[in-house]
Image (tube, rainbow, N blue to C red):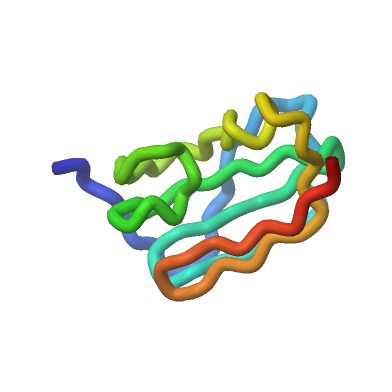
Length: 91
């Protein structure tokens, strides 16, 4: 089982330098950001698939949700629930 750190205070996060974040949402144990380019990055606890990576893997490092890119979908909004992530996309 992967160890996922829980941080009670804000912490700096390293994303690739060319990414600009436009929106952020936090769930109980996971976080999601939308970039200005319309991509979704998620990280944290993924037991229920809420990270969107087609598995139940948890990660302390942000990962791009490749499914949305492959389908040509541009993310406009993201809202994290306790164990879910809701995404509004444009085709």
